[in-house]
Length: 274
Image (cartoon, rainbow, N blue to C red; front, side):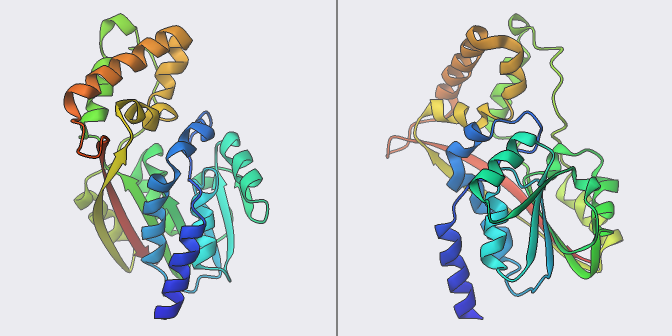
């Protein structure tokens, strides 16, 4: 088994495509600029289950297919499908991975039952986790596993800066409709999983991503969190909005000794067996 694990890790490093965001209007090309950093949690979660032998796997919120590719590396004998509700992401996934299967649908629209449901940075875009997670558990075969990674990074200074800047009256963004992007506490997930699974594990990892400069901080969120604001503002005002965030970031993110800046990113994980 140790040899299998080593081979899987090497295979994953060779397949380093980025998983994109999960909404219909997300920009996959923008999101792919940080493929290694965004894919690492999917690798970490998949490797947590390397001893399993699932026959059928669904990758929920597959984006442009990088997490699905990770799963194929770790579970080469499994029947795997990646799903996403973004046409842009599914088109990108099919172009990047023509040998893999992808479908356009939402998490709760997934048909059939599976031995593994995998979701990397997707469920935060879907509301009502108290009913969502049990519903996903019901799509598992007996002994199947739900494996999830959810960002819990709302306290990172970059995201606080975006929130505060967007609230300034001069931008007129108060009517911009944002997608759901909230999570519960780890202990709340503990109680949900205790009610709907036979066994489960929960844990957290905080990643420290070294980015080139302060502009890269904005590029990180430009295809997802900033996108509704930029679409509303248009090109000229949008550029001004971006510039203000970059300038604000310079005050709170010091340049490190290598010339870059560090973006902290807290992520919450769980695996739950039916």
